[in-house]
Length: 138
Image 1 (spheres, rainbow, N blue to C red):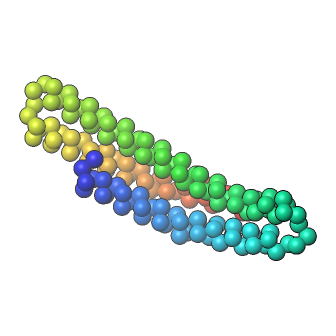
Image 2 (image 1 turned 45 degrees about the vertical axis):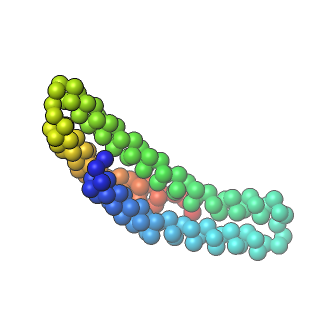
Image 3 (image 1 turned 90 degrees about the horizontal axis):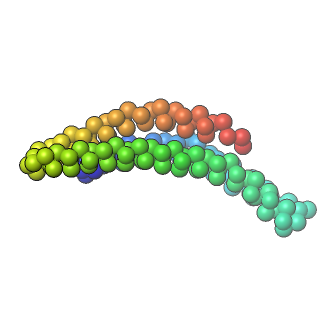
């Protein structure tokens, strides 16, 4: 992807991830650490019980991180497929004898469309992630 298009997409994804981290993940991390500390303070538990308790404390955050990672991987896969299709179109155009400036213009326009199309998907992806993160039992 051209640098400008890549920067646009990267900034949008980073903004979304930072928002999710601040509004959801960070709170979950706080609960996880407080819960884990309580596990360690219970002197009546065996070492194994403490480890199991800590594992239970970590489970919601691990689930949240898995959801975000999975959603971002799917998003990245779709974007990659779109840009690979642009590559194929550019190769096809080049093979018909088109000159490099025309091929570059097609590639840039196509990649720009991919980025625009995927930026439009971000609000629904963000909503889906927020709904999923909100529904994780603490």
